[in-house]
Image (cartoon, rainbow, N blue to C red; front, side, top):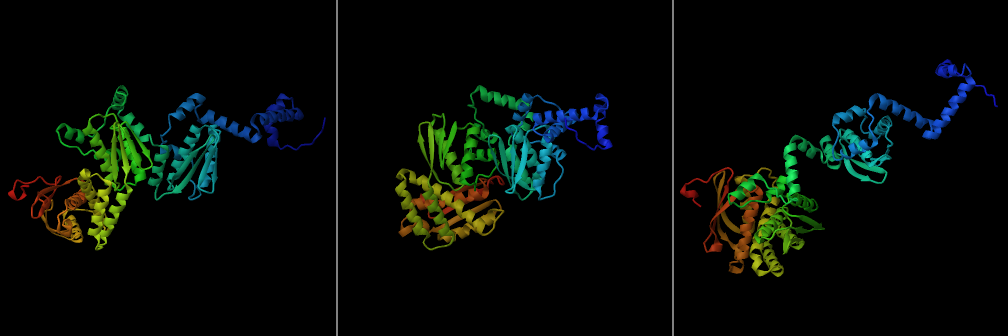
Length: 501
């Protein structure tokens, strides 16, 4: 037996009082008992520090938390996927940290995990990356939500999240404001929040709707009320509205890489088609329709949505498949023509004739009539967009449209007269159109392009609220072209003879 001298202060003796009583005042026996207990703690927890952490955690759990069975806890985590906690919950867990020292939050996160008895550790790396290791994936996801919601108030959003077997990493990026940063949280971690809230608010509606889809094996088609009303009254419906309804985004100027997945989501979710496969920039649409007119209508709707965003696609219909192929070469030639027209280069007419020859070589003769008119519409959209950018126009009306189209006619070499009858009706007369008479001979395709230009520009500016009424056209043998552009939503056409179209 070894003998050692130790020095104890009164506070240490006070701590040992219960052991001293047990051992009848024998300090050596009490110390030996403490050593044996410490040895057991080291073997059980790996170190005394871990044992202390676990003891503190257990005490906190008993005093401030609710004990939950592991299986129930995993079930709760699984059912919270896609749902963000309330911001008030986060503010109650963490103390504010001085911006931009967000890495200081790591200490608070790790302390939270200790208090909760979670086996997850968090560390910060200089590349604005948090790494969470240990614990279940669902548990790490919950901690991640707490971190992201907290730092969103510092205008810091999410750039990327990756999950591995036992590790989750998240890379942050500075945003312009807290709203943008919070939007990142919704996109990456809370995409089901709005859906769950709607289901809770209108439970009977959603139970019935889901049950109906299940009972019909998802053969129900969802359309907007105004389209249903038009359909029941025998009117033609604008199915491109479906895109705006489902996405909440304008139908134009969407990047192709973003547009194709949106189209897939909209048409699959509405059940208009069975499935859409995306192969780079080609779309393959699977459907169950046998009526040729229905198939053609769906094809036209898809092509029009793509066309509105400046992408030319050609359809190939094969039995229960519709294949849409991207024609980049046509888009390139159209862009060249628009550039030529806007820069007032003298060779525009020659380039356009070369373009018609180019089209004639890749399309069947029977289809070129319709194709040229559609291309004219696309050119009209692009030309008016370019004009809009050049002159910084943010608010269109018939007066600004009159000025813009007068300039476009001058560039095309056409003599025209545009007059506002009132703020909602414009009278448009083309008295001379050398553009459609190359080499002194009338060209019907060029005439169709000019009509398409007017329609494309009008549709873009007035978002479908304007209608073009044609009274006379050179293509029908008249000596001039005469049109009325009427804003339908703002005016019911009077019965006056001057407006009798």
